Amino acid sequence: MKPYKPIFLLFIIIVFNQSCERDDICTDDTTPRLLIEFFDITEQDVLKNVPRLSVYDVDADPDDVNTNFIVNNSNVNAIALPLRFENEGELTTTEYILERDSNLRLDDDPNTTSNMDTIRITYTPEFQFVSRACGFKSVFNNISIEVLTDDDNWILLTNFSNNLTELNVEDETTTHINIFH
Image (cartoon, rainbow, N blue to C red; front, side, top):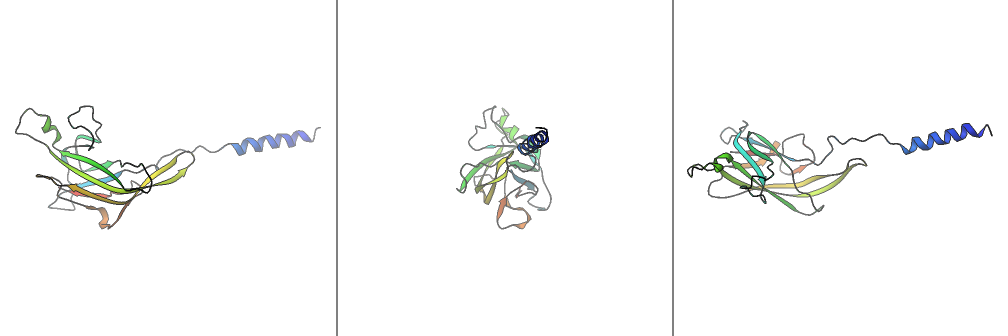
């Protein structure tokens, strides 16, 4: 029976070694957000902060203090917006309200107001397998952006960064959309 002990031990080691996997940690391979930078309309290569910007989903109530803001009353020249992904391959739309001078709306003075513009982002989500530990991520294909017009738009122009004619969002390494104001 002695010769079977080393074989049995080797068998046990092989079985345990095959059942173990290295730990996968999800870091950068997650669903990307849409990266937007704001530029000066008169000097289109110069980044320009949007004063007191608040960004929230169009379905959110801007007067509700418990609204989950993407950005809340910040002076920023760039934002990252999450996009909805429900059904792969189906045309999907996400709308956001971008409110400039958002704290002015909360004043009691009727002469001070904020300016709200709504952007509509249309795209087709696609699910991509990342790994067993991370599962799937979504990428967004054929993106288009539209500013819904009103009487007083502060967003004057939008385009894809890097002079692209078609936009697919697969990662967060570069800016996707430029907004001029």
